[in-house]
Length: 356
Image (cartoon, rainbow, N blue to C red; front, top):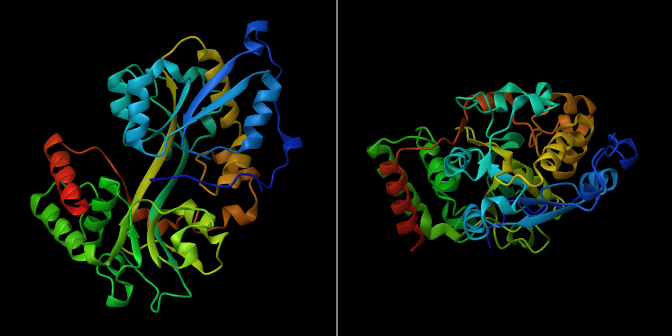
């Protein structure tokens, strides 16, 4: 099963006693309310959620999805007004806005907007509103078993053109843009290239790699992970997940490939319903409070876009190069952007042929 996020909670440097909350100022009906959050599994610190629930007298109900496709299906089946807040990757956010699945955010209602690093904010729409608020950001790289891999990898070509002794020992993502994008990056092209020759070369590279791939799915992150058990020696992962894997085996390392990478941003967006919109905005502001944002980020091992939260975070978190890629890596990396319909159809066809 494709699990992008499966992270053990807790272990944050900031204690629950430091949480700063405002008094609950709503009516009696609000105290018995339930806020519905659509999010990846284990992608928010349980202590932060509990602090919000206790201070507001409400319940946060989490609905989990295991893939972007499953999230879309939930929205189609249940209706976007069934969810008060949604976790959406930046690539899909414009589509969600066009579908009317999310409600644009009035910047004047976002109390902690000045704390967010502008580099991770998306451009406002024509009315000056935001489609979502950045939650975490990171990149894609290689997690590998230092004790099993004879020669440590340095770049994407070590993954896409692996030596014979890695046959059947590598695991790739099934996500089309990330998989094809990293193949493009390995060959010196943009992850967003729409050039026909570049796409053909990337497909050839993926087909060349295929006999060495154990499976095309996101790697499990618990103690049963094949990277932990030794069935797999190298895998494509999102950077923070490499730290989760390393908790289960000391030989697991993470590499920022020298060719650069794809940068991702996850946003929190308001659902289309109006019934609990004030409560949803309150929770969004609560999560963006620097104290809560710092605690949440340290618990999950991902980079917060909240600059004020970084002032409160531990030195170990701030100095971890897996969480915060060096500037040289960031300069070589790109955010995955939407491509034209014709290019997307071709990408879909390439990945479909690869996964047959």
